[in-house]
Image (tube, rainbow, N blue to C red; front, side):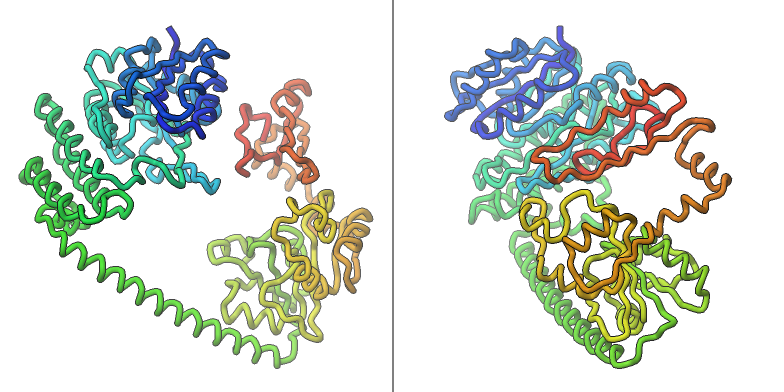
Length: 594
């Protein structure tokens, strides 16, 4: 008996099915059976399933003689399942790496609950991945397992079957099955959650929910979207048959109204000319299942009124008025932005007519970031060694808390920032090009390149279009021509920058300003830093900070830091700058890799 029965129905998803099945079979937790159901798909889904079944004995192919729809296809998979837990996955979605291992661990921690709810992320065809917006409902704090009464917010999650693991014995005992038709997840999800004696959550993205550019059922215009009414009739019939669940009727009623309005208002679901009929059906549904005395939130009363009274014409008028209001707002905002830009341009020209102020220095870093890097080290040095000089730092307002109190805070693009840009005798930055700066006579620009040029940079990128991306080399050299001094840390950096970023600047090979603190730090400073990083007293800290390898066609496999630190022994701790494929810091498995 496997731990998991992963059920994958497939119908016209041949372009995505291989990736889906591979995401299951490549899981680091191998104790599973994969029941792939070919719902009489007219494309190559059946052949793909047979191919995977031939190479992996864990795959159990099911070929249905006729197309019966997503819900009944899942039922066909359930009838053949032998695992402890049922996991559903649509044929165009994927499991994330190590998802089943995390699910198995959480099931063990929580005593094998009836249902485990985990998170998902929408994977768009553009490559963007966005996590579920109400992921806070899956927090693992507090006792577990629990019942729905303890965490009613779970009903606000998307009503789908594939973001949960279900104990098979529970499902069979209660007789849960999927109905036919669109929105088949609705009369499954709500009854399952309400009936489950024990529920647990896993705050981890385990499924990538593919958002197809075309072809998804919910983005197909069809009369079949009217089937949503029958699905909610099944939900309320379940409540009628189980009086002990009556307390959930008002909540499900509000969820139903919101769902019906979603179908009604989406432009790509209902056929042209059918919206009035849909709203009439919604009005009947509202009156049939309404719970007298159930409160309606104030912000939802207008929406409920549209359904309660079937106000199709009123909705069209409101939508038209809202569209006109939005258009007028856009025109007004566009006009105000244009006026503001014109006033700021005029202000900057006037300020440039005034002489540069030798008592001013303006600092900024790439991306209008907070206080840090070589510019921050130079700003601190200016305040220490030239106290009469006033320093200012341009960064986003939300990063102002990172700046020293003695430094003036400026928001990029404001009149105060443009004044400083025009009047400051010195500008210090690690940016190749300072946005908005028109270099004037008497102004000195000090450039502090970030890092050491181990990767391709500057003009060398002309032969590396993939690494260069959308670099505008002419504009890059315009910025270089504004530099007066370039601060470098070593001879390699000096030679590289003078070759790949040629200009009339003077190179100052004085070392990196931000590394001065390594020479001036006291033993007390070191002790505080080690404590902040969690480096035990007496341990040797090793810094692992790999540079990008943009000359490699494939990603570089980073060191197995846990293995390295085990081989080094207990006296060593590794400080790692390594990041995962999404740019987020890697999650260490021990406290000896920071």
